[in-house]
Image (cartoon, rainbow, N blue to C red; front, side):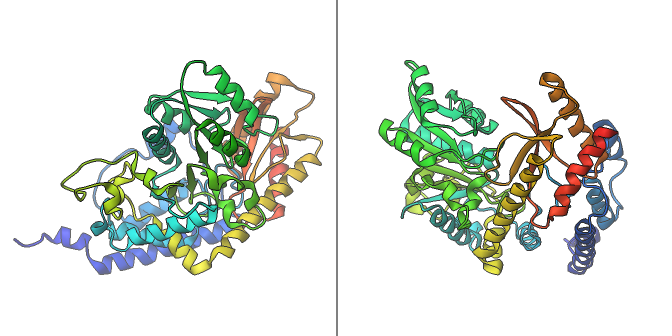
Length: 460
């Protein structure tokens, strides 16, 4: 039976080559525009208007590259240096090319034979991450799709190891922790953070006392919390966990990257004593989303959550006997070749490059905080510990709920204007604007331009 010409054409190598050249040229042109600070960061349209614009008119006959250009033009320009919003980096261009290769090869990684290159590369990346965190020999884990799935994986392993029970979490914990606790049949008992947004031993002790007759099996700490970028005192919490026989999980999705920086790695002191750690490479390590490591101090704990019999896929016997089949460690079966992006980036640029990036991100956050503290019309929420800065515009003599409303409206105006992009967060002391410095190409002049832009919108 002959292959229909339409199918053969879609897979034609020369068509792929020609389209690929056009796509790369278009993306390179976009990078150049963003680095010149041209155009909008966020080309705002209302959800209703956008849905009408992108509604299906007809399928078939479109030019692929023209459509991709339209999508790029209508999307948030994460790589624009005026983007100060979410914890999403402008991906390292070489890593984006590695992801293209991953998509083209499409090796699902549940079993070694479906990832004969990417599985050993994943183990190499996991070994490197464990070593950077100071985890002991025998530590291991798996890469998975995002911190939310990573936290769920770690908490499932915790329950498998310790039995049913509740967990103590920071009042600043990422929402995925509460969701994961519900999935495993536990309660997430919130312990209030201190003025620096740290989860302290005293707060955990109070939460343990308030648990009453309910059994508590673990503590969830943060290394670079989502709201403020705070780092909990991990060594002190590890002491408490050891004394009480509790599992210590560290959500280092954001802050794990400081492990590669000699200047900032002390913020993670004590993380090597955690039972489990989540670390997103698609944050401070500049990878395209999603690349999340779930790491276990005792490597065999990696099998606790998902040790399942599946004769059509996995080898017979204990999972540790066929450690090369990654599907025994994660909920995912058809798992992307996500390790090759970070592996290639480390091979090309080396660890020192990543340290430079992280040191620059933190230094720019300090510079922004200094400007805010020096400005009578802005207020800093707290001194940043990493690359997240929370602040607000004071307004003209307004306080309380009116001040919160003022800053909510200001953020909305920033989004609709589109020249800059920031987000916001609700802290115990009120609503604050929140800027995350993810782009290492930001200059100090961009910080001045951001504050001037906010003042301009307030005057308007």
